[in-house]
Image (cartoon, rainbow, N blue to C red; front, side, top):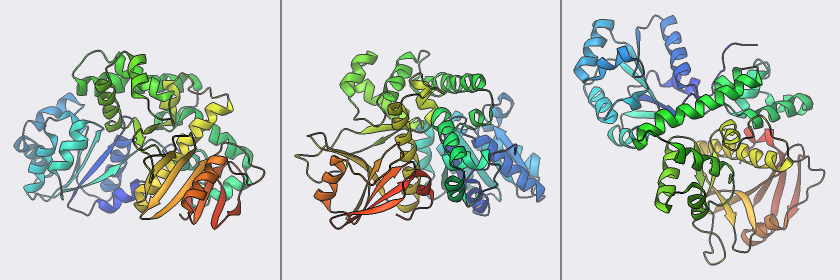
Length: 419
């Protein structure tokens, strides 16, 4: 097996090396940002280009960030008068990081800056404000299912994974269960022993609380925040009940909302808001949440590596489909919502762009025939979309409901399906 995991964002970063803009890499802790930067550095070094790598988690590197002048002295020492590429890792450790980088950029230096950091308020808010027109953001999530399968199959089927899924159904289902159980943190994926996988995911979550959250909240004890994350894990894909969360976590309503906002900004959860056009009969405000990583989701509710019931598998599978659709929306500019009515009708996801809508139902099952739920039919009858989609494990067929073409699509075709 290959000893490195290829990431889909890597070619984009390579293509941005020639741009003057700062390449800003953001994402969850231990999603692989540093590994990507090190690989970029090796590519540049192989081309004979001078590079320098600094990490604000390394004590010996921190003094160079006292001011722009201190850093420039270090750069001049390394490169002399030649242009070079400067890698800065964990920039969120630098107070006023946005203004610091803005000052460097505005000096019109001959150097390219590639900067990374875990999710934080400084990185997500102030840096974006300070670097308007001066940076391009590359978000690195944990591995997608597509990336995991490529890695597990030694990249033999890159570019033709749909054919692999259709041909080797047993191996495909095994890989799906692996991803649903353990998620996509690179270190977890690369580890063969389940015992070590458990230790790694526990360390990742503990490190997130003790380093990121403790620093952001300016507290030493993060038990209440951790408990809230675990409670949210139990409500994945369901309407968020703030009052119930507050009662169970012994937190006030404002604190619950505050903590959820922090969890969103640090790439742990992602809220999805309702689609509606009739506020009297449709849910309009309460979001539902999904996790950025399935392994962390499972860890939060104590079922990491141990999904057994079809219900649990169904919820996690729905979260996986959300991750695929979220990436699709980033590429196409579509909006991603869900649909609920006051009388309990629901559709898992609704993609929309302008007046066009595409309802999507998710089923963790081998559908034998194109059968639709009452709720899904209700949405189709109400909105008369041109197309509708039912994501399932194996069935690939089409049917008609009135003027709506309903496609039953195996989940692995989502990567190549034209929406």
